[in-house]
Length: 300
Image 1: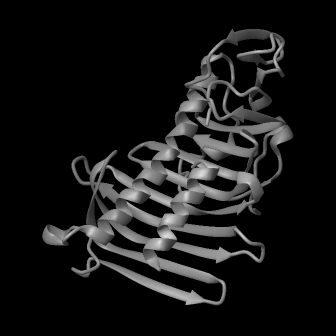
Image 2 (image 1 turned 180 degrees about the horizontal axis):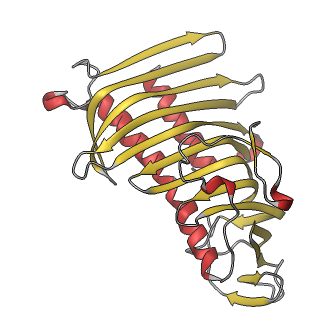
């Protein structure tokens, strides 16, 4: 059961790829937000400055960095399942990680508890782990529908440098399959925080939805990206959903907005003034055009 659940988790994450609390006292940003537990420097309290087109590239790089979470999790679970436990490495057989499975009507759950064991990872080398990771799979009433809830409470350090590392938060993924190869999915994140050394990045109050039908993928989102590199947070929204074809390249249409202390609007394809490529509008005045979007946000 455990392997099947993890495989289905990766499949749903591939489709989607990857709320009450405090108040932000900053004019139009004064609203209820999910608390951030690892944000010791308060980046989630202040809108980031958007002053140059390069801020779009920085925000895109930070968003893409969140994909490291899935790679890190894959490495950790692979270590728990396959490492020998020699020299303190994570291993269920050696007792350095405990794996518990639960099953009931309509759901399956796996809980991994780490007790100071070591895991070898692609991005960070060997890391020492404490805490737990919980994943629950629920089958929906409709045929082909699935819901997966992940909860992260993982702490540790990078062995080579001693830098602290933490992954805390939760997310819920839902997916359903329709006829003729169509599918839809959503990702909802109250808060998901990732820290390595002094670098901090988080999603907050994020909702992302995607549908795929007839060779066209459409996606929309709303939520905050919080980052030490941005020295604050940026709110993402899609006033017009983004549409893609499976051939890749820029979206064929759509409007992505980044709003913080300043606004940056990205209009793609048919939604841009030229009708193709990418049009960036900075704070309602300066305009930049690009033909390619390979390195930009949401080119999935």
